[in-house]
Image (spheres, rainbow, N blue to C red):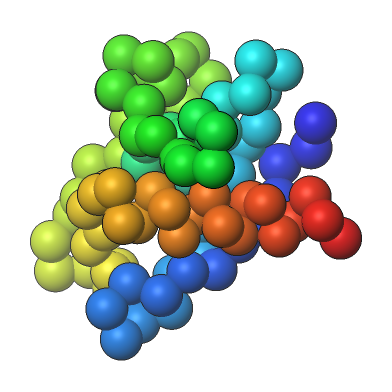
Amino acid sequence: MEPFNIRIMCGSEEVTLTILPSDNGDFKIIYYGGILGGVKKNGNNWDLLSPDQVAGEDLPLYEPRHGEDRIEIVLTDLIADRIGDEIDLHFQD
């Protein structure tokens, strides 16, 4: 599967994330060239993956850099659901 971009609201700001699908149903979430985290669909819900489940040799883990022109995102269950909803919409098209 090919990578694709999604947009989600994070507070009052819109954030663009790149999604890297895998063959096993996991989705890595890329932000500013690093792996922010990952999600996997579990029934109708989206679960966050642990850092060791998404770490790999292809990209480093994302590290926040305070003071730069970035929106700092903390992956929570709510954010995982938003990301999952956008992933679902991508595959409906």
